[in-house]
Amino acid sequence: MVVGDGPHLDALKALAKGHPVVFTGFLEGEALSKAYSGADVFVFPSMTDTFGNVVLEAQASGLPAIVADRGGPAEIVEHERTGLVVDASRAEMMANAMMRLMQNREECSRMAQDARCAAEANSWEAAARRFIQHKEA
Image (cartoon, rainbow, N blue to C red):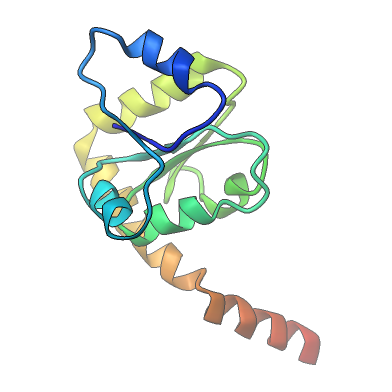
């Protein structure tokens, strides 16, 4: 399943033609929650995203994330603990990471649990607490 929209959507649809891939388009609210709950892994190859709120949402849903080694999401995902951080400029690295987690269900499950815990630690409340503690120090 590919959730979202973007400048490469038509190219992705062409590549996926003949394969069992569903393109949902942009989702939010309950529809997005259902998409997360039905997934095994969250893949976010953006190399330009500055924060990665969608990565935190996926982790909060108990999904390990595969993200690019550039941009904000690379700072959110703990490589080999809450997901995988890969060189997204090399498509085969992203594909290998997806295959790794799909073929190793135990590792995927462990990362999913750790991702959920990490998301709780990255809440807005936790970030505000850390900021206040830093300012008081």
